[in-house]
Length: 216
Figure 1 (cartoon, rainbow, N blue to C red):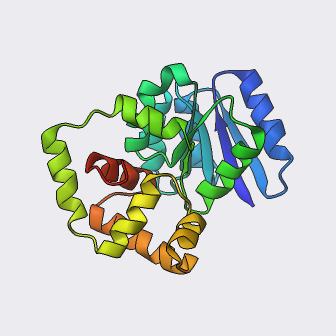
Figure 2: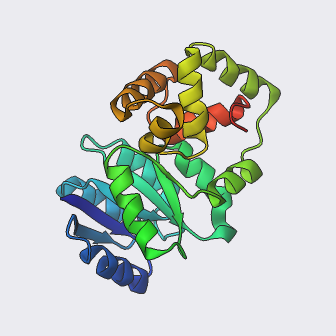
């Protein structure tokens, strides 16, 4: 059972998400928060696996909340909820440790899929919007590109192949199919990649890969 917390200042959005998630027998909504500060309190009191977090909220926004949530002893995975017009903030949230994001008009089935993917250790980067948003708002400097390339030099050629597909938003199953590998082998490669690149999740690894021009 995946334990989910919904964080949004719009009561109707919270209600709609709660109704959607309740239809999935593998998901339990254990908490609902109206802002980032309440989210921290509830995540401390409850065992939360995945938090769906809005970007703009009173008292504490989704970016600050993501940093605080990921720093908790029992840190939940975080998926950012946003609208396209606000996505200049999404990169900051992903860099802070979020495992992905959803546009608020995402198909309901994709929202459920995102919860399951993130809970299982994968990331949810919307196939088209994620790349567009990161490209638009993540302008790398020459020094940043050089530093990213230096980290990638720590990887084996096979690990670079895996990272290139990861940077495109592929799941472990997708990567296994495309590289003719077992999924367990892909998981081992991903674990090694995160360690070598000194990042905490797949999204940060993907951003670093894009900084270095891999898979761009």
